[in-house]
Length: 459
Image: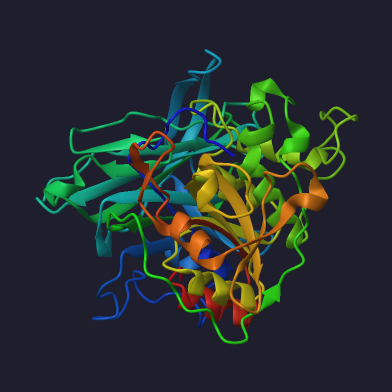
């Protein structure tokens, strides 16, 4: 329910499964053209820009330093892998103190010119990292004053925790921008400074002398410039838009006090609990071997597994947005990204196409009728809309699984999700999420899914 220690005091973020749309072995008619920029004029007035690389032709582009593009040896998805290692490097894990030597190869994306000069950037990646492998994602931007940022580490990631501890690298700064866990933000957006261009660098690591290695299926970022606002315009419910998706229901509160090493369950597990609901909606579920470590007395052990698999050792919690999307994409056939959406009309478009979404919001108890709690940051799953346009949500902050399904008033929900500023219980002005959303969908979605993802701007 509540995020541990203020991690994004003045920030907000994003998610996008756009890339999920065509993670196939070759470009298709639904893949973005060129560098993924919108046609001239179509970007006018936009506040969010998404760019993801995922097709074979995408991986052929950019600069390779020991990496190679693959057409789909792993589940039919094109990807990036180690060809001939570029060299060896030592990494001392700051969370365990363990120092190890790794072979590595790196890929640097083409420079992307954003349709939105941005105040924030959030990277996403989907990868296969078998034992003895891990990846690092970095982002570098160009400012409106023509200077560039350093290469900022946006995450060191592996699906397991036996080789390195999955971690963000907080506090990186050049005096103009700073990395706050999973979000790169302009320090003083009121100055007018923005990020205009950006590129990614992916570094793939494996044990020296081993064959194979990690495979990256998708990588990119969402950048945004959301105006500061306490209230947002109300969207009009879509006529005949009532629909409810059959998404499994899991309570975070049934896990309160479990696994202190993964932030103790309960209110700290809203993000992985929400992620697990949608993963299972799409047919994914960890097998018995993956769950063997969980105490057999605990119900819904897959939620414990999701918490362990999203835990960020630097943040000391399970709420790192890209780590949750990356976890979802470890399930066969799924892709996941972080983006921002602009209104509940966007969510209605997705739900009509059968795509649920995870939203981030913060509010006082009286601001969301029926919630029964207040929060400085909470994730829940939007699974549908009533005929009148109210939001049907699977809210993991519930006493048990049957109580998870809630109906929230449209206007209240939309405002607490999309605003960037709010007053907390003490009357202090604090930040709001600005429309953050996790989107998980099949890597090869149905045509209606492609149309919906395109309509909301994620592809």
